[in-house]
Amino acid sequence: MKHRLSFAYFNILSDNIVEVVVDEGIEMSLEMIDECHHFIEDHFKEAFGMLINRVNNYTYSYEAKLSIASYQHLKAIAFVYYSECSKAISENLYQIRSLDQWNYRLFSGLELGWQQAFDWLQQELSTVKVS
Image (cartoon, rainbow, N blue to C red; front, side, top):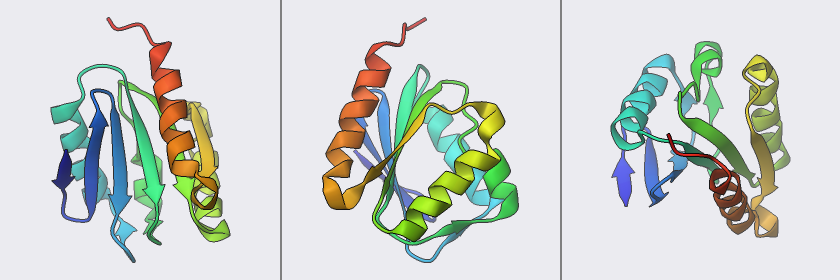
């Protein structure tokens, strides 16, 4: 099920996986991150994974980098990138948030990475015990 936020689409792919597709040219702000948090809190009450589909080019404000993907039940993040720049942005985001010890992986969208990312998320979430 596809949901439109002010800056992106959130596609609920399964009970516990959401795909995020941010619009072209956006700089993610703290307000946008807050909008994400409200959406996630409304739709995911248990362990879930995020598939960040970086098909479009966008960036993050410094403040957004510090608070993005700070969800209590987030168990895995898969980044699908389509350019070296997009890959570098995802890697930089992980480095900034390294203290959070995200369970994440990068996948090349040019090498069937979307399906690999989805499969990896399913595998990671299959090992999570539901409370």
